[in-house]
Image (cartoon, rainbow, N blue to C red):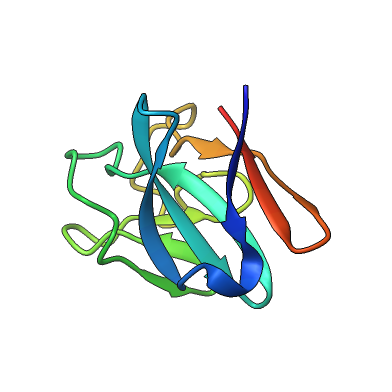
Length: 101
């Protein structure tokens, strides 16, 4: 299902957004592009809302796992080969931003 999450200029660099009253996700804005992820780290369930973006990765504040913003793959090599952070597709129509969930 596709959800409207706001105007690109109205989004902060990192924020939690509720989709249709169903689930909260983490929305990130980096280098002019918008990304969406599950809000908890796959490793230990820590909140990623206070994570930082480094080298095109979302870094978990709890244990330092670094998830690629496009693929969700941990680039530190600590995760199992098939284990990755859930990233949701984001699309834009003009200034409007949508997430598929």
